[in-house]
Length: 358
Image 1 (tube, rainbow, N blue to C red):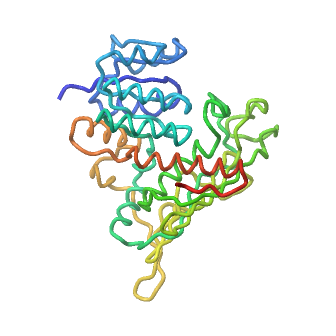
Image 2 (cartoon, rainbow, N blue to C red):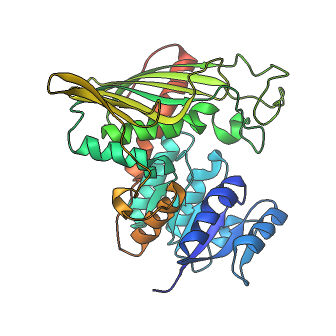
Image 3 (cartoon, rainbow, N blue to C red):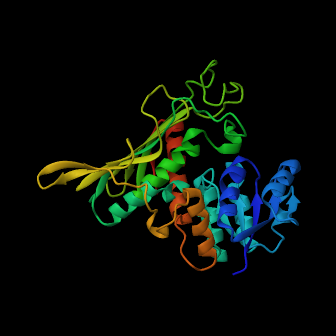
């Protein structure tokens, strides 16, 4: 088959460090167009990852006029929705970086555009493609853990506040660690549970460390004047079937219990966590057991025998779906629920009251 023709909108770190190297690894696509509001950044990215005749733009609408199979939306969160909607209506399939949108209303526009155009839309939740995640998903589908009635979505760093780009800018991002890394943990939790029907949520957000100096942060001290998002957020979500999810998201928390993009599940037949790698626990033959699967050999069920990274598997899944050779793993109808719950936690934190879903 001919190589897919791709365009990149937003040539920052997520495009250069995640998507483009993975596309390059697969080798079945040509990146022929690059767009960024900073022309020099688009040009540098095109020279590194593009075809010899790759075009460079500063207005994404000019890029969308080209004959492309798909585009990647790798811009700050605020612009995910309208760029994705325009891209879908221009006849392109879309891979949009996480989170889907800054709020539920904007995410709804994206889902509707995908439905109206018949084009594929997927969101960049690469944690689903990890070997441990896929193993846990398989165990869940086999019914090994039974009904999951309690879960934790874990996204906690001790001192790792991102100090580059617009991560600390509430207007551009819509929030801090909750919408940045909490979104991965929540997506992984909902996906493994296969439960997308929330009833209500209670949330709290904190700005306790924003003004600290001499922080021992992994990427150097943050600018206290620019740190306008929360440093920590916590949510308590009750699902329609009565299941409870506790979500913890922080870039800087005084704790040694550090886990990012993991989940803890407790079911009627067994449980699972990622505390020392993936662990499955339960009772067998009248005895408690803990199982730690060997995930070093082989790969995930979708691509048995490969040793590709989650980022590469994410691209392969998207490209195969475009070619009609497979299905998407991350569906917009799933991702929108993640966005809706995150928004509910922020709204509950602001009001001091539970947020009830319609």
